[in-house]
Image 1 (tube, helix red, strand yellow):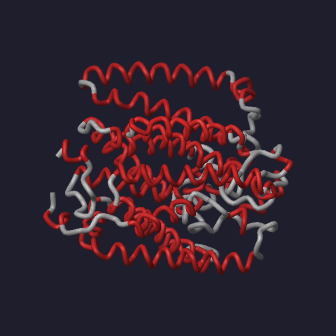
Image 2 (image 1 turned 135 degrees about the horizontal axis):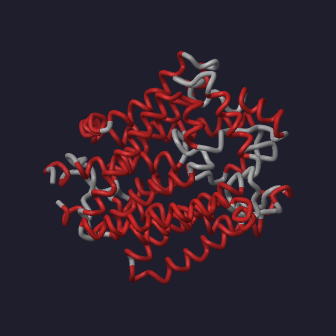
Length: 426
């Protein structure tokens, strides 16, 4: 352990409150109260209000990171690909058709990334899961209240069958939050056995809200991630056993995948979906066509949607205000081109490998989290844009995982509190 870590105070109540607030906000909470045409405030007022809030959050994050600025430079050196990808968004102002917009949003992404670094550097994995569980419990309880008392905000439009959206701006946002929330609650139920009854109740509430959101993506991602959680401890078996086991799992997965592809219409009918994936197929085709026009560097970070791209999709699908490509890689490609896609894939695979190694060399349940989250991100990224997500929880957690598995493999951040699992593995 670095001697300096003994001198650094553990996060106090103020820091925990600040972190919980930011995590809740980045999960998409309360946007339904302020955003959109039916919001409680006008769009101009909302823009100024939210920009002020995010500016304060970024400044507070920078102040909190000052205590570990030398360690932060060490993080940059260990994960150059990751920070090159983030820097690429800023550089893309030079080829963006709206450089001012790209600059503002890349600054927001930088702030989001720095908060992810702070989250990883100030809180152990066990603490991260505790804070996340609080966020999702709050999101679940407040969503119930919104549906009961403020149905105008808590329920989606009639076109979505009055699906629940709770404190979130869309039913899919509630589905995403509860899908990840259920996974976090399972971690807490396993690690905190004295309060497991409470967490199993939270799991039940999360599953109920996930079902009421009518989010098929959330249901599939949640079930897939829970399966990963159940299987991942097998990585701690002897190498021979683990290889044979996962080869068997891979064979079953390939067989199941081939069956699903050959019976796609039938399978999608289980979740009331059609082969167009609720119009996403058209968005994907348009995105691929537009990628071919700017394949190497893209259109500039966050410039293609919702302007030019949204107009094209709207003419083809009659769906207004499309805001992303509904696929993480396609959206990334439109933003920063093939260069950005390669940087992300290389960093993702590097972090995935580190996460697998971390599982094999630890015995605590918390060290399953990086691997489980990375695979959750991959599953959700098939139909949602979760990479380089400014002011988004997914990008914060991806950043934290990248830093966490990197700091475990190399010189640890001096500000990272070492959990029991870390000391056992050291």
